[in-house]
Image 1 (tube, rainbow, N blue to C red):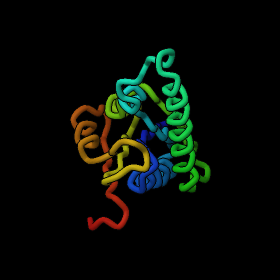
Image 2: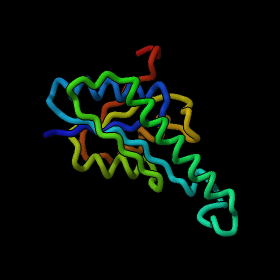
Image 3: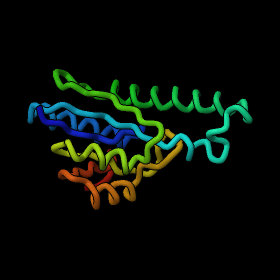
Image 4: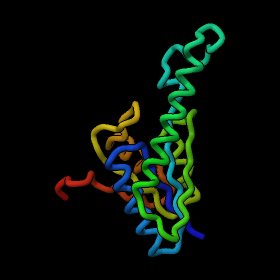
Length: 150
């Protein structure tokens, strides 16, 4: 069975990308991997990985993990997958570009949204899309932000 990989981060553009990917997967008989990747060390800054010396760091890491999981599942709930299999994938120690590019090696399509702000603590903006375009091993679809002129 073919696979479409889509980058998600809780933003409206990533929800639009997931919606597009699910619709395309339905037409092609593919499954979808919805990938939310972030680098926990980068999010926590210089406090990580020293939880023994900084007691609040472990709590912060757990809170970030829980928020990321919530964002991933909230995004999935916004899309009517119907009979399409959508596998949620959360990677907390991965650069989003590297994770998406690696997954593109076994995918038929890589789908990304464009936009300005994420509800998560990083941006999923055209620079990530451009870096994926340069490195992906499958065709890449860029879905414009909802209500953005095409």
